[in-house]
Image 1 (cartoon, rainbow, N blue to C red):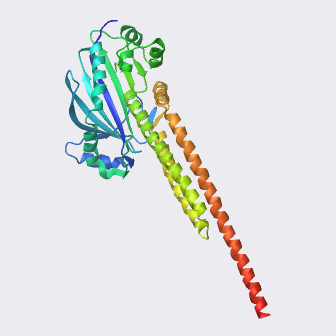
Image 2: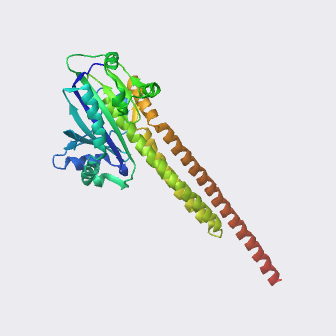
Image 3: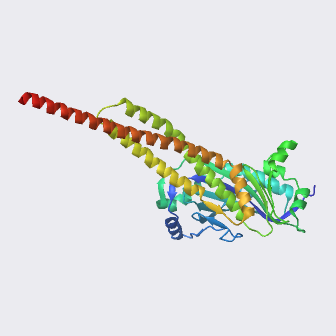
Length: 368
């Protein structure tokens, strides 16, 4: 296969963090604007009409200072940007520009950056970000959950324009998408190249679980932005899935404790626990709806296909369905507790009425 030269392009390493229950983006934007050399703006898709794609609440894009990355054989300088999402996620992107590299060197750079990203100063960059926008974080609750994604982007090759078919015939995308040095089986290669998309004859997108390749001569960043949103949705859905996993056993224990403590205050205990569960369901439902509606693709069929494929690859619908099932269990428990609280109150009232009748009878007999 020919060793093409990448004339213009870059490699993008993404790391996403859950940093809060929610983020007040307007306040964060004001805070960063007041920061020394602060550059911040609401994100928008550059190559897609606004009516075709809409953010539920556009994330806030922030420019951080560049960082040097030691790749072993060389040191590269990466531009650093961050994005804050209303539903509590923050993404940090390291962008390494590429110009004049042979394709094999471009693949080697991407694989080296994947290894370097493990030890990149993510925590320092996140601390630099939250030190300024911290007051805009609602109920900060950093978790250990993280997502990372690597994107190789090429705008042009030296000396020639290429169609998507010419590019696939000229280079082997598998080493770039897999990070493997050894040859893969035919079935593994086919699976790796399965999520392939083109709109024009000269553009190409190939998606995998943890990497993507984008060939876009027009320089649009829409696909990369959509992939970031999909990763942010996965991160937050995983967070709420784990939150509910931890909550369900506690809920069962509380219900059992309440039932063992049957007394005249049982109705109040049932009602208190029911209110607690209802509050949690309402909060989680509200936030998961914001996550689900983070990006709405309507008229751009091509971008909608890429976005849907990314969500499917990242298993976002599966995790979202698990969250819905657990919320349903908690809702059913809330309903049962509410019914038991109502039943306990009714029983208490009946007992009080019977006691009053008994007292009336006793007083009547005493007077007689």
